[in-house]
Image (cartoon, rainbow, N blue to C red; front, side):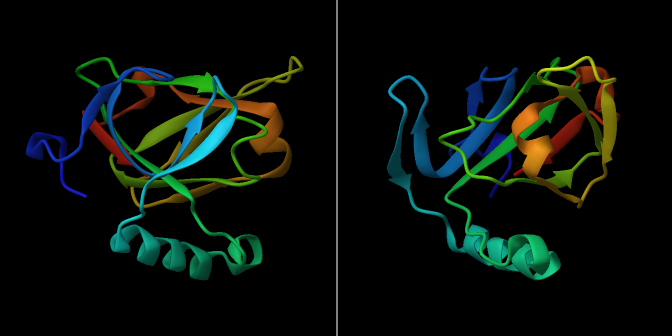
Length: 155
């Protein structure tokens, strides 16, 4: 997948917070409420999908990723992930997050109630699966202060 220094498809973005990113698969057009084919998934991500299904077969038996976003956060540059809920209609019932480099703590806040925030550690090499109530009713984000290392990369 290469690093941001390679210049191979990594782009500056400021969608839900500043970072560098690379994307594959379908493109979700939130303005027009459509999902369009874009870049095919590379073989390494297809293989990764199979490994994730094997790691959690009860949750992921029928899961096939149609979109993947690699995100490279730099603590030093002030990067973060703003609190949000992925689109409830255009995104699927599961959101997966594979932490590749750098630990982080994700904060969940309920979208419609005053429930206290929930902080979840995301260690390097962990797989997070959002489904059900968490997927649809809790915003998730990562504050810059919750990036203990200077760099975090996730897919």
